[in-house]
Image (cartoon, rainbow, N blue to C red; front, side, top):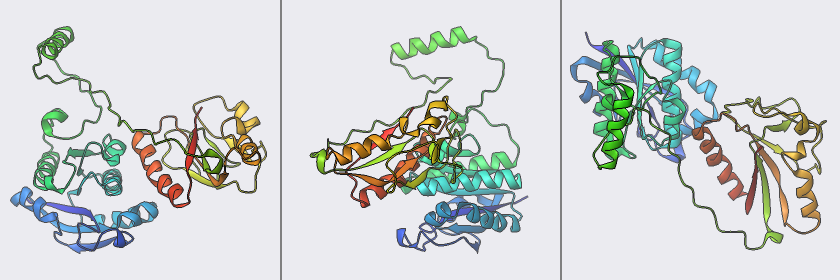
Length: 348
């Protein structure tokens, strides 16, 4: 039996163009396109790429619900046995799209969906627990290995073969720990790992801890009295009614709000929707979390140049690092383009 596969890629790998064409809406093409050739070679005669879905990275992120609905129909119409996406390597928006498409197809169509991303891609952290993500290099130099990894894992899933540990199968671990009988108990295994570490021998931990990037601080503002300062908060302070429906925890979005006509936040215009602390005092006076009133005083006294007219708000509790990075990647360029010199990020 030859399995039917649909492949998802972005506008760049489809040969449409780079950033200037990242706005293109989803389209469907018969057969393989771009990196689909490497995937088809890796699948061999066991599977056939019957169609390719293409979508611009910006379009997918800016019209997420609409894009997913369109892509889902295109995939469904092909009646595939599985979907593969990418490889997305270290491309942030593309990686998020690959993970999101795979998660959506798996949930709605009930078929295997596999992609390949560099482990530090935001899409890997956001979707590795929902779908299988093969570990890939940080650039297209690793295309052949990534394609082979996707094909190998997809075929195993289609054949309903039992998967081994993530390290053996080549995918990013999903945090699942299966119960099985081991020939050695935990104390013995732990001591063996400790001795191996002390002696400089290789060993594999049974429980990997997350690693976080170290971001060097920016140089100080040269003259704060002439600087434009922005306010950002992960403390969940939003306009009354939470117009952007930001989650109380595990946020996947942020809000941008115009405060140019305000000198003070009150319980009549703003509120806290944060799910990780007692919001009584923040609701009574939202300035305790987002200090607009104090910034206005500094502005009037000439101690800062001016306060930027927009504030950016989200909730930090339970929010994935990948989503926080995505927020920063969107907010940062906007502040820079507006001539903002520094930002104050308040938490709880």
